[in-house]
Image (cartoon, rainbow, N blue to C red):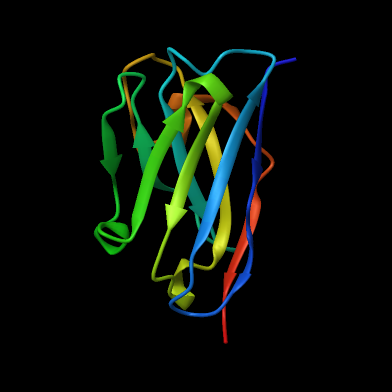
Amino acid sequence: QERLVESGGGLVQPGGSLRLSCAASGFTLEGYSIGWFHQVPGKEREGVSCILSSGGRIYYADSVKGRFTISRDDAKNTVYLQMNSLKPEDTAVYYCARSFSANYCSRDPHDYDAWGQGTQVTVSS
């Protein structure tokens, strides 16, 4: 069974850091573009960042540029999202997802065909 599993979420104070992991099972991440999304109650899932199979990185929200870094370790079959200088408005459930296309990223959730269960990130003092 092909699936993604997120981990690394939790409660952190403003200004703190977290590193989210997205591990693939049942398939090899190499050759796929992987995106990170977040969602808060009552709102649609929004694209945060995406990493192409070639390693190119895209950040969709201006608010995360310079604070979040997406990376991948194909040997470990894992994609990461390093989140620094966290703010209360970063609070959300974070999901990773596999793009339909090997070297294509999109902020549209419909362009992704496999999702993790999500990990909660809460930024609060």
